[in-house]
Amino acid sequence: MPAHPLSPPWLSPPADAAALPAHVWPSSARRDGAGAITIGGVDISRLAAEFGTPLYVVDEQDARSRADRTLAAFTAAAAAHGTTAVVYYASKAFLCTEAARWMVAEGLNIDVASGGELAVALAAGVEPARLGLHGNNKSVAEIDRAVGVGVGAIVIDSLIEIERVAAAAERHGRVQPVRLRINSGVHAHTHEYLATAREDQKFGIPLADAPDAVAAIRAHASLRFLGLHSHIGSQIFAVEGFLEAARRLLTLHAALRAGGDVPELNLGGGFGIAYVESDEAPEIEHVAEALLAAVASVCGELGIPVPKVAVEPGRVIIGPAGVTLYEVGTTKDVAVTVDDGTAVRRYVSVDGGMSDNARPALYAADYSVALASRTSSAAPALVRVAGKHCESGDIVVRDAYLPDDVAPGDLVVVPATGAYCFSLSSNYNYLARPAVVAVRDGAARVLVRGETEADLLRRDVLANPQGETP
Image (cartoon, rainbow, N blue to C red; front, side, top):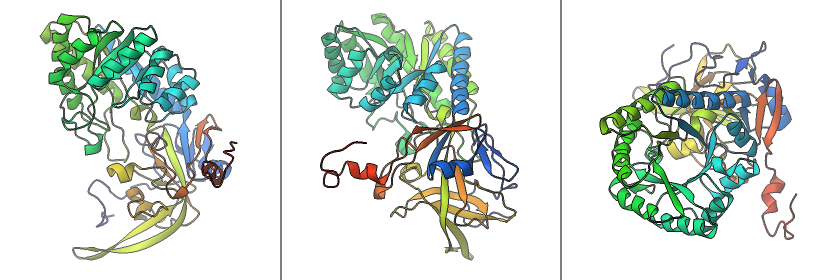
Protein backbone atom coordinates (compact mmCIF):
# COMPACT_ATOMS: atom_id res chain seq x y z
CA MET A 1 0.00 0.00 0.00
CA PRO A 2 1.51 3.38 -0.97
CA ALA A 3 2.06 6.02 1.67
CA HIS A 4 -0.70 8.55 2.17
CA PRO A 5 0.12 11.97 0.63
CA LEU A 6 -0.34 13.63 4.03
CA SER A 7 1.82 11.09 5.87
CA PRO A 8 5.22 12.21 7.22
CA PRO A 9 8.22 10.42 5.67
CA TRP A 10 8.91 8.33 8.76
CA LEU A 11 5.40 6.82 8.87
CA SER A 12 4.48 3.87 6.66
CA PRO A 13 1.16 2.00 6.41
CA PRO A 14 1.32 -0.92 8.84
CA ALA A 15 1.92 -4.41 7.50
CA ASP A 16 -0.09 -5.68 10.45
CA ALA A 17 -2.56 -3.22 11.95
CA ALA A 18 -2.89 -5.35 15.10
CA ALA A 19 0.85 -5.42 15.84
CA LEU A 20 2.19 -3.95 19.08
CA PRO A 21 5.89 -3.15 18.46
CA ALA A 22 7.85 -4.45 21.44
CA HIS A 23 10.21 -1.47 21.61
CA VAL A 24 7.27 0.96 21.97
CA TRP A 25 4.80 -0.97 24.15
CA PRO A 26 5.05 -2.34 27.71
CA SER A 27 6.63 -5.78 27.72
CA SER A 28 3.36 -7.43 28.79
CA ALA A 29 1.21 -5.89 26.02
CA ARG A 30 -0.66 -8.58 24.08
CA ARG A 31 -3.82 -9.14 22.11
CA ASP A 32 -6.16 -11.79 23.43
CA GLY A 33 -8.16 -14.27 21.39
CA ALA A 34 -10.82 -11.65 20.69
CA GLY A 35 -8.24 -9.13 19.51
CA ALA A 36 -8.44 -6.86 22.56
CA ILE A 37 -5.24 -5.48 24.07
CA THR A 38 -4.22 -6.76 27.49
CA ILE A 39 -1.50 -5.23 29.67
CA GLY A 40 -0.21 -6.92 32.78
CA GLY A 41 -2.73 -9.66 32.02
CA VAL A 42 -5.67 -7.23 32.31
CA ASP A 43 -8.09 -6.59 29.43
CA ILE A 44 -8.21 -2.94 28.40
CA SER A 45 -12.00 -3.09 28.09
CA ARG A 46 -12.23 -4.23 31.69
CA LEU A 47 -10.12 -1.27 32.78
CA ALA A 48 -12.32 1.15 30.87
CA ALA A 49 -15.45 -0.33 32.41
CA GLU A 50 -14.09 -0.28 35.94
CA PHE A 51 -12.15 3.00 36.01
CA GLY A 52 -13.46 5.02 33.08
CA THR A 53 -11.57 6.88 30.38
CA PRO A 54 -9.24 8.61 29.87
CA LEU A 55 -7.09 6.38 32.03
CA TYR A 56 -3.36 6.17 32.70
CA VAL A 57 -2.25 2.54 32.96
CA VAL A 58 1.20 1.53 34.27
CA ASP A 59 2.64 -1.94 33.91
CA GLU A 60 4.20 -2.35 37.35
CA GLN A 61 6.46 -5.26 36.48
CA ASP A 62 7.70 -3.51 33.35
CA ALA A 63 8.57 -0.35 35.31
CA ARG A 64 10.36 -2.35 37.99
CA SER A 65 12.24 -4.40 35.42
CA ARG A 66 13.44 -1.29 33.59
CA ALA A 67 14.61 0.22 36.87
CA ASP A 68 16.49 -2.97 37.73
CA ARG A 69 17.98 -3.19 34.23
CA THR A 70 19.14 0.43 34.31
CA LEU A 71 20.83 0.01 37.67
CA ALA A 72 22.45 -3.25 36.56
CA ALA A 73 23.73 -1.63 33.36
CA PHE A 74 25.44 1.28 35.09
CA THR A 75 26.70 -0.86 37.97
CA ALA A 76 28.36 -3.31 35.56
CA ALA A 77 29.77 -0.57 33.34
CA ALA A 78 31.22 1.24 36.34
CA ALA A 79 32.74 -1.92 37.79
CA ALA A 80 34.42 -2.63 34.47
CA HIS A 81 36.35 0.62 34.91
CA GLY A 82 37.16 0.27 38.59
CA THR A 83 34.49 2.55 40.03
CA THR A 84 30.90 2.56 41.24
CA ALA A 85 27.67 4.12 40.01
CA VAL A 86 24.53 5.47 41.64
CA VAL A 87 21.25 5.78 39.75
CA TYR A 88 18.69 8.41 40.75
CA TYR A 89 15.18 7.97 39.38
CA ALA A 90 14.14 11.36 37.94
CA SER A 91 10.76 11.55 39.61
CA LYS A 92 9.56 14.50 37.52
CA ALA A 93 8.84 11.91 34.82
CA PHE A 94 6.18 10.26 36.98
CA LEU A 95 5.76 10.30 40.72
CA CYS A 96 3.35 8.95 43.27
CA THR A 97 4.13 7.28 46.56
CA GLU A 98 3.86 3.76 45.15
CA ALA A 99 6.13 4.54 42.19
CA ALA A 100 8.72 5.93 44.60
CA ARG A 101 8.54 2.70 46.59
CA TRP A 102 9.05 0.67 43.40
CA MET A 103 12.20 2.57 42.52
CA VAL A 104 13.72 2.32 45.99
CA ALA A 105 12.88 -1.38 46.16
CA GLU A 106 14.80 -1.88 42.91
CA GLY A 107 17.84 -0.14 44.38
CA LEU A 108 17.50 3.33 42.92
CA ASN A 109 17.72 6.67 44.69
CA ILE A 110 15.16 9.40 43.95
CA ASP A 111 15.72 12.80 42.34
CA VAL A 112 13.14 15.47 43.26
CA ALA A 113 12.83 18.98 41.88
CA SER A 114 10.33 20.74 44.15
CA GLY A 115 8.93 20.81 47.65
CA GLY A 116 5.94 18.85 46.41
CA GLU A 117 8.03 16.07 44.93
CA LEU A 118 10.06 15.98 48.13
CA ALA A 119 6.84 15.65 50.14
CA VAL A 120 5.65 12.71 48.02
CA ALA A 121 8.98 10.91 48.36
CA LEU A 122 8.99 11.40 52.12
CA ALA A 123 5.36 10.26 52.34
CA ALA A 124 6.44 7.10 50.51
CA GLY A 125 8.92 6.43 53.29
CA VAL A 126 12.02 7.02 51.16
CA GLU A 127 15.09 7.48 53.36
CA PRO A 128 16.10 11.16 52.98
CA ALA A 129 19.73 10.21 52.40
CA ARG A 130 18.59 8.57 49.15
CA LEU A 131 17.09 11.80 47.83
CA GLY A 132 18.64 14.48 45.67
CA LEU A 133 17.07 17.93 45.31
CA HIS A 134 17.18 19.81 42.00
CA GLY A 135 15.73 23.07 40.73
CA ASN A 136 16.87 26.42 39.37
CA ASN A 137 14.78 28.41 41.86
CA LYS A 138 14.49 26.46 45.08
CA SER A 139 12.74 28.53 47.68
CA VAL A 140 14.35 29.23 51.04
CA ALA A 141 11.60 27.09 52.61
CA GLU A 142 12.26 24.19 50.22
CA ILE A 143 15.99 24.31 50.92
CA ASP A 144 15.42 24.51 54.65
CA ARG A 145 13.10 21.51 54.64
CA ALA A 146 15.46 19.46 52.47
CA VAL A 147 18.43 20.20 54.72
CA GLY A 148 16.36 19.65 57.85
CA VAL A 149 15.18 16.18 56.86
CA GLY A 150 18.67 15.19 55.72
CA VAL A 151 18.51 14.83 51.93
CA GLY A 152 21.59 13.15 50.56
CA ALA A 153 22.50 15.88 48.08
CA ILE A 154 21.36 19.28 46.88
CA VAL A 155 22.25 20.37 43.36
CA ILE A 156 23.27 24.02 43.49
CA ASP A 157 22.12 25.89 40.40
CA SER A 158 23.26 29.47 41.11
CA LEU A 159 25.66 31.46 43.26
CA ILE A 160 22.73 32.67 45.38
CA GLU A 161 21.92 29.09 46.35
CA ILE A 162 25.37 28.53 47.79
CA GLU A 163 24.64 31.01 50.55
CA ARG A 164 21.08 29.79 51.05
CA VAL A 165 22.08 26.14 51.43
CA ALA A 166 25.03 27.00 53.66
CA ALA A 167 22.81 29.09 55.93
CA ALA A 168 20.22 26.31 56.17
CA ALA A 169 22.89 23.76 56.99
CA GLU A 170 24.25 25.99 59.74
CA ARG A 171 20.77 26.43 61.23
CA HIS A 172 20.29 22.66 61.34
CA GLY A 173 23.80 21.88 62.52
CA ARG A 174 24.53 19.77 59.45
CA VAL A 175 27.20 19.48 56.82
CA GLN A 176 25.14 19.37 53.64
CA PRO A 177 26.54 17.48 50.61
CA VAL A 178 26.09 19.50 47.41
CA ARG A 179 26.73 19.20 43.70
CA LEU A 180 27.26 22.12 41.34
CA ARG A 181 25.25 22.13 38.13
CA ILE A 182 27.37 23.14 35.16
CA ASN A 183 26.10 24.53 31.89
CA SER A 184 28.51 22.59 29.68
CA GLY A 185 27.54 24.31 26.42
CA VAL A 186 26.91 20.95 24.76
CA HIS A 187 24.09 21.24 22.22
CA ALA A 188 22.15 18.00 22.38
CA HIS A 189 20.09 17.10 19.32
CA THR A 190 16.57 17.42 20.67
CA HIS A 191 13.66 19.87 20.80
CA GLU A 192 14.73 23.40 21.74
CA TYR A 193 12.67 23.30 24.94
CA LEU A 194 14.30 20.00 25.94
CA ALA A 195 17.91 21.13 25.47
CA THR A 196 19.16 22.18 28.89
CA ALA A 197 22.89 22.83 28.44
CA ARG A 198 22.88 25.61 25.87
CA GLU A 199 24.49 28.83 26.94
CA ASP A 200 21.36 30.99 26.80
CA GLN A 201 19.03 29.23 29.23
CA LYS A 202 18.13 29.16 32.88
CA PHE A 203 19.94 26.10 34.21
CA GLY A 204 23.41 25.83 35.69
CA ILE A 205 26.59 27.83 35.97
CA PRO A 206 28.91 28.41 32.97
CA LEU A 207 32.08 26.35 32.92
CA ALA A 208 34.22 29.46 33.20
CA ASP A 209 32.50 30.49 36.45
CA ALA A 210 32.67 27.09 38.10
CA PRO A 211 36.09 27.36 39.84
CA ASP A 212 35.00 30.46 41.76
CA ALA A 213 31.67 28.83 42.63
CA VAL A 214 33.41 25.71 43.95
CA ALA A 215 35.76 27.88 45.97
CA ALA A 216 32.73 29.61 47.49
CA ILE A 217 31.21 26.24 48.37
CA ARG A 218 34.42 25.04 49.97
CA ALA A 219 34.65 28.24 52.00
CA HIS A 220 31.59 27.12 54.00
CA ALA A 221 32.24 24.57 56.72
CA SER A 222 28.55 23.61 56.52
CA LEU A 223 28.86 22.40 52.91
CA ARG A 224 30.58 19.35 51.43
CA PHE A 225 31.37 19.49 47.71
CA LEU A 226 30.53 16.18 46.03
CA GLY A 227 31.28 17.10 42.44
CA LEU A 228 29.95 18.52 39.20
CA HIS A 229 26.57 17.91 37.65
CA SER A 230 25.47 18.14 34.03
CA HIS A 231 22.20 17.59 32.21
CA ILE A 232 22.31 18.28 28.47
CA GLY A 233 18.66 17.67 27.59
CA SER A 234 15.91 15.10 27.28
CA GLN A 235 14.77 12.46 24.79
CA ILE A 236 18.27 12.08 23.34
CA PHE A 237 19.17 9.07 21.18
CA ALA A 238 22.81 9.82 20.29
CA VAL A 239 25.36 9.31 23.04
CA GLU A 240 27.90 11.71 21.56
CA GLY A 241 26.49 14.70 23.44
CA PHE A 242 26.86 12.89 26.77
CA LEU A 243 30.42 11.93 25.89
CA GLU A 244 31.40 15.51 25.05
CA ALA A 245 29.77 16.80 28.24
CA ALA A 246 31.73 14.22 30.24
CA ARG A 247 34.97 15.32 28.61
CA ARG A 248 34.34 19.00 29.37
CA LEU A 249 33.34 18.35 32.96
CA LEU A 250 36.23 16.01 33.65
CA THR A 251 38.75 18.60 32.52
CA LEU A 252 37.28 20.94 35.13
CA HIS A 253 36.96 18.06 37.61
CA ALA A 254 40.69 17.40 37.32
CA ALA A 255 41.56 21.03 37.94
CA LEU A 256 39.28 21.18 40.99
CA ARG A 257 41.05 18.24 42.64
CA ALA A 258 43.96 20.56 43.41
CA GLY A 259 41.77 22.35 45.94
CA GLY A 260 40.14 19.35 47.60
CA ASP A 261 38.29 16.10 47.17
CA VAL A 262 35.94 15.66 44.17
CA PRO A 263 34.54 12.17 44.71
CA GLU A 264 31.91 11.98 41.97
CA LEU A 265 30.63 13.12 38.60
CA ASN A 266 26.91 13.37 37.82
CA LEU A 267 26.01 13.20 34.12
CA GLY A 268 22.26 13.61 34.56
CA GLY A 269 19.72 11.81 32.39
CA GLY A 270 17.76 12.47 29.23
CA PHE A 271 18.12 9.05 27.60
CA GLY A 272 15.49 8.68 24.87
CA ILE A 273 12.82 6.07 24.26
CA ALA A 274 10.84 4.92 21.23
CA TYR A 275 7.48 6.62 20.82
CA VAL A 276 6.77 5.37 17.30
CA GLU A 277 7.83 2.21 15.48
CA SER A 278 10.51 3.99 13.42
CA ASP A 279 12.31 5.31 16.52
CA GLU A 280 15.61 3.58 17.26
CA ALA A 281 16.53 4.40 20.84
CA PRO A 282 19.81 2.90 22.10
CA GLU A 283 19.68 0.11 24.64
CA ILE A 284 20.48 1.31 28.14
CA GLU A 285 23.43 -1.10 28.33
CA HIS A 286 24.99 0.62 25.32
CA VAL A 287 24.46 4.04 26.90
CA ALA A 288 26.01 2.93 30.20
CA GLU A 289 28.99 1.24 28.59
CA ALA A 290 29.70 4.19 26.28
CA LEU A 291 29.45 6.75 29.09
CA LEU A 292 31.66 4.88 31.53
CA ALA A 293 34.19 4.02 28.85
CA ALA A 294 34.43 7.70 27.90
CA VAL A 295 34.79 8.78 31.53
CA ALA A 296 37.53 6.22 32.12
CA SER A 297 39.33 7.18 28.90
CA VAL A 298 39.36 10.89 29.72
CA CYS A 299 40.44 10.20 33.29
CA GLY A 300 43.31 8.15 31.90
CA GLU A 301 44.36 11.04 29.66
CA LEU A 302 44.20 13.43 32.61
CA GLY A 303 45.98 11.06 34.97
CA ILE A 304 43.24 11.07 37.60
CA PRO A 305 41.20 8.30 39.26
CA VAL A 306 37.83 7.44 37.76
CA PRO A 307 35.24 9.08 40.03
CA LYS A 308 31.99 7.61 41.22
CA VAL A 309 29.46 8.26 38.46
CA ALA A 310 25.84 9.27 39.07
CA VAL A 311 23.02 9.39 36.51
CA GLU A 312 19.39 10.50 36.70
CA PRO A 313 17.19 8.59 34.22
CA GLY A 314 13.42 8.91 34.38
CA ARG A 315 11.71 8.57 31.01
CA VAL A 316 13.73 5.48 30.00
CA ILE A 317 12.43 3.69 33.10
CA ILE A 318 8.79 4.73 33.33
CA GLY A 319 7.95 5.98 29.82
CA PRO A 320 7.50 2.65 28.00
CA ALA A 321 5.76 1.11 31.03
CA GLY A 322 2.76 3.44 30.72
CA VAL A 323 -0.10 3.77 28.24
CA THR A 324 -3.17 6.00 28.08
CA LEU A 325 -6.60 4.61 27.30
CA TYR A 326 -9.26 6.69 25.52
CA GLU A 327 -12.73 6.24 24.07
CA VAL A 328 -13.46 7.53 20.58
CA GLY A 329 -16.24 10.11 20.54
CA THR A 330 -16.44 11.32 16.94
CA THR A 331 -14.70 10.84 13.62
CA LYS A 332 -14.49 13.38 10.82
CA ASP A 333 -12.95 13.27 7.33
CA VAL A 334 -11.29 16.51 6.26
CA ALA A 335 -10.18 17.27 2.68
CA VAL A 336 -6.72 18.81 2.56
CA THR A 337 -5.20 20.48 -0.50
CA VAL A 338 -2.02 18.82 -1.79
CA ASP A 339 0.10 19.42 -4.89
CA ASP A 340 -1.95 17.21 -7.19
CA GLY A 341 -5.42 17.80 -5.76
CA THR A 342 -6.85 16.88 -2.40
CA ALA A 343 -6.25 14.20 0.20
CA VAL A 344 -8.39 13.11 3.12
CA ARG A 345 -7.26 13.10 6.71
CA ARG A 346 -9.49 11.50 9.29
CA TYR A 347 -9.79 13.22 12.65
CA VAL A 348 -10.52 10.78 15.47
CA SER A 349 -11.56 12.71 18.55
CA VAL A 350 -11.20 11.15 21.99
CA ASP A 351 -12.38 12.01 25.50
CA GLY A 352 -9.08 13.46 26.69
CA GLY A 353 -6.41 15.56 25.05
CA MET A 354 -3.85 18.15 26.02
CA SER A 355 -5.02 18.10 29.63
CA ASP A 356 -3.71 14.55 30.01
CA ASN A 357 -0.90 14.75 27.44
CA ALA A 358 0.57 18.20 26.88
CA ARG A 359 3.70 16.97 25.12
CA PRO A 360 2.46 17.15 21.51
CA ALA A 361 1.42 20.78 22.06
CA LEU A 362 4.60 21.65 23.97
CA TYR A 363 7.23 19.81 21.93
CA ALA A 364 5.46 18.59 18.78
CA ALA A 365 6.02 15.13 20.26
CA ASP A 366 5.04 12.15 18.14
CA TYR A 367 3.08 9.20 19.45
CA SER A 368 1.52 6.06 18.04
CA VAL A 369 -1.95 4.64 18.66
CA ALA A 370 -3.72 1.31 18.39
CA LEU A 371 -7.31 0.16 18.25
CA ALA A 372 -7.58 -1.56 21.61
CA SER A 373 -11.01 -3.10 22.10
CA ARG A 374 -10.96 -5.21 18.94
CA THR A 375 -9.02 -5.98 15.79
CA SER A 376 -10.20 -5.14 12.30
CA SER A 377 -9.60 -6.37 8.77
CA ALA A 378 -10.40 -2.92 7.36
CA ALA A 379 -7.73 -1.12 5.36
CA PRO A 380 -5.54 1.32 7.31
CA ALA A 381 -6.58 4.97 7.22
CA LEU A 382 -4.32 7.92 8.05
CA VAL A 383 -5.70 9.54 11.19
CA ARG A 384 -4.99 12.40 13.52
CA VAL A 385 -6.11 11.67 17.07
CA ALA A 386 -7.47 14.90 18.54
CA GLY A 387 -8.55 15.83 22.02
CA LYS A 388 -11.77 17.54 23.10
CA HIS A 389 -10.30 20.88 24.20
CA CYS A 390 -11.03 24.27 22.66
CA GLU A 391 -7.63 24.47 20.98
CA SER A 392 -6.71 23.64 17.40
CA GLY A 393 -3.36 22.43 18.76
CA ASP A 394 -5.08 19.88 20.99
CA ILE A 395 -3.58 16.87 19.24
CA VAL A 396 -2.79 13.59 20.98
CA VAL A 397 -1.31 11.72 17.99
CA ARG A 398 -0.45 13.85 14.98
CA ASP A 399 0.01 11.11 12.40
CA ALA A 400 -0.88 7.44 12.65
CA TYR A 401 -2.79 4.68 10.92
CA LEU A 402 -5.92 3.10 12.37
CA PRO A 403 -8.37 0.72 10.68
CA ASP A 404 -10.72 2.53 8.33
CA ASP A 405 -13.74 1.36 10.34
CA VAL A 406 -12.64 3.06 13.61
CA ALA A 407 -15.85 4.41 15.08
CA PRO A 408 -17.41 6.13 18.11
CA GLY A 409 -17.32 3.86 21.13
CA ASP A 410 -14.07 2.16 20.15
CA LEU A 411 -11.26 2.15 22.68
CA VAL A 412 -7.83 3.27 21.55
CA VAL A 413 -4.54 3.15 23.42
CA VAL A 414 -1.56 5.48 23.09
CA PRO A 415 1.66 3.75 24.25
CA ALA A 416 4.80 5.21 25.82
CA THR A 417 2.90 7.74 27.94
CA GLY A 418 4.34 6.75 31.31
CA ALA A 419 6.65 9.77 31.45
CA TYR A 420 5.52 13.38 31.76
CA CYS A 421 1.87 12.88 30.78
CA PHE A 422 0.54 12.53 34.33
CA SER A 423 3.19 14.99 35.56
CA LEU A 424 2.11 17.69 33.09
CA SER A 425 -1.63 17.06 33.34
CA SER A 426 -4.00 19.95 33.97
CA ASN A 427 -7.65 20.86 34.40
CA TYR A 428 -7.89 22.89 31.20
CA ASN A 429 -11.53 23.39 30.20
CA TYR A 430 -12.28 22.01 33.67
CA LEU A 431 -11.61 18.44 32.67
CA ALA A 432 -10.92 16.20 35.64
CA ARG A 433 -7.51 14.57 35.60
CA PRO A 434 -7.57 10.79 34.97
CA ALA A 435 -6.79 8.08 37.47
CA VAL A 436 -3.53 6.16 37.42
CA VAL A 437 -3.95 2.40 37.60
CA ALA A 438 -1.19 -0.18 38.01
CA VAL A 439 -1.60 -3.60 36.41
CA ARG A 440 0.28 -6.77 37.23
CA ASP A 441 -0.40 -10.51 37.08
CA GLY A 442 -3.99 -10.03 35.96
CA ALA A 443 -4.90 -7.57 38.72
CA ALA A 444 -5.45 -3.81 38.63
CA ARG A 445 -5.23 -1.31 41.46
CA VAL A 446 -5.55 2.45 41.68
CA LEU A 447 -2.37 4.37 42.46
CA VAL A 448 -3.85 7.85 42.06
CA ARG A 449 -7.59 8.45 42.19
CA GLY A 450 -9.16 10.18 39.23
CA GLU A 451 -10.66 13.58 39.90
CA THR A 452 -14.37 14.33 39.80
CA GLU A 453 -16.26 17.53 39.08
CA ALA A 454 -16.85 17.77 42.83
CA ASP A 455 -13.06 17.82 43.30
CA LEU A 456 -12.79 20.68 40.83
CA LEU A 457 -15.47 22.70 42.60
CA ARG A 458 -14.06 22.03 46.07
CA ARG A 459 -11.43 24.76 45.67
CA ASP A 460 -13.90 27.30 44.30
CA VAL A 461 -14.77 29.55 47.22
CA LEU A 462 -18.29 30.44 46.11
CA ALA A 463 -19.12 26.82 45.29
CA ASN A 464 -17.60 25.59 48.54
CA PRO A 465 -17.54 28.50 51.00
CA GLN A 466 -16.75 26.31 54.02
CA GLY A 467 -13.64 24.85 52.36
CA GLU A 468 -14.90 21.33 52.94
CA THR A 469 -12.59 18.47 52.12
CA PRO A 470 -13.53 14.92 51.30
